[in-house]
Image (tube, rainbow, N blue to C red; front, top):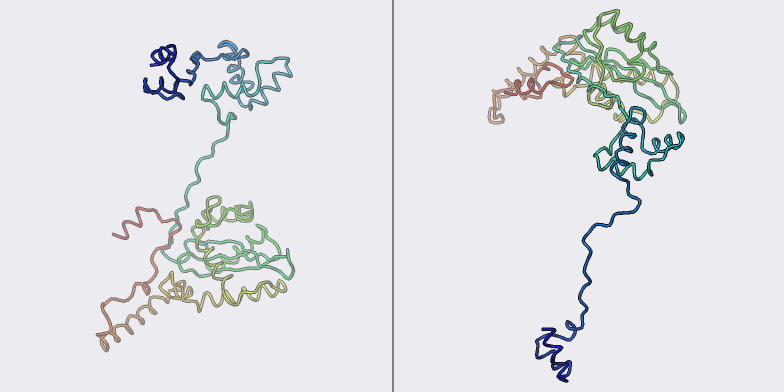
Length: 331
């Protein structure tokens, strides 16, 4: 069409009329055709040759430099009077060879074993931990050592000291074992005192299995954590303790209430003392008799002849119950 348009112009036809005759707008006619694009890639004049790239890669992967970052390799080569390329070139070559990753040989640590503990009666598994109690001034704390029987939830020992140490923990354990007997397992987290040589030595001498939570896994020690929540979220728990004696007196009163008056939901709303010393069965029987009499008197108020599940005697107490075991019990 452009050729016909030119012929019309040569015949002295106006541009407007010529464009109309060939069916094109003047904008299209006057638009310059795009210049041809050179499809061949532009090779930078400073691009390394294949041999030079291979030399760089060999240097980066050499035993001397394989654990070093490209910046370190670059500077070490300069110290030896060698220049193979820029740091960015080193990275580019590593990327092209799919080697842009952590270059250092890193230690691999096996996964921590999940502690799986079960107690079917009191005295088998004890759990302990240390919690901080705020002292009279900011920055001053007292350390409360507490050990609990995971089956009965009975606090077998609670000591408050001005400091935390494995030696003090051992003193508490000796006292507890002398009163309640030596357990099969003692479980704790990985605090300094819990993993101390003094504690490890005592438990080893007594042939007590040591169990520890996995690092940064708080629910591996659920019984101690739940106990501390009951302690610190109670309405009578103070913001600060005026003295060590004040803290000891409060903890003593709390332990007495928790063991003998607190009806724990996790053990059928029995007190830990009743479960620990074997009185819970008689209490459960009395409750059942009371409910049976109520059903006989007011049968219209009951939809079942069985006692509520919340009153059931405690079964096995687990720390990280295996999934298969839980599914079998549910079935």
